[in-house]
Length: 220
Image 1 (cartoon, rainbow, N blue to C red):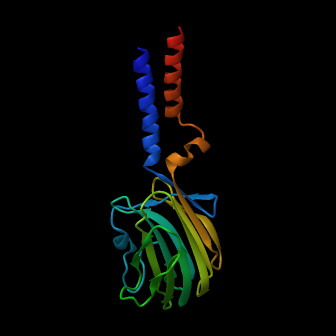
Image 2 (image 1 turned 135 degrees about the vertical axis):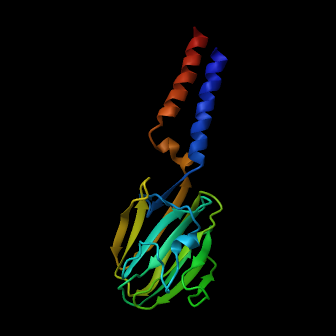
Image 3 (image 1 turned 180 degrees about the vertical axis):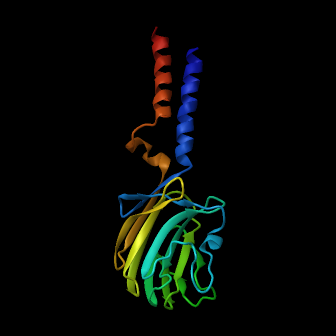
């Protein structure tokens, strides 16, 4: 009986670890947590580039709208979309500095807007007409642990930015915003790495209780 209790408790603890290992926690500027939008299609398909513009439904005139999404293979991607219907013409120069991930899709195919690899990451130069957009998707992360710094060098036609998060029903809300364009630091860590910093789950408490009960029975 004692061995059965220990094995049951250990199995539940392994379950807790496996659940945490399959997810990551993404934070902006060291504190603001964001959740990704779950898609049932590819990143490019959801971007829905047509008439020289993104058509995700999140575009905003004279703004940068950014958000994370999971595609139909559960790959994680960062969308950055500049401008939208009714907006001014714009231009942006920025760097995406990090050791993991790459640009997998760029608005305006045909390399009109240069995306160039650098020693620290990627340099991007966008320019777009009034009422149109420019943007990209950044993906192909090799693990759940990575960091990315987005540093803006110059911009015009952009009055502010909004970084979105999503609930379990796919409803969006703004978690980070500002006027102009502020540099953004993004950190992703495996969920299992931060379990000890959070309150223990009910399953984990139950597992520890089972193992504790086995110890009491052994002493008895």
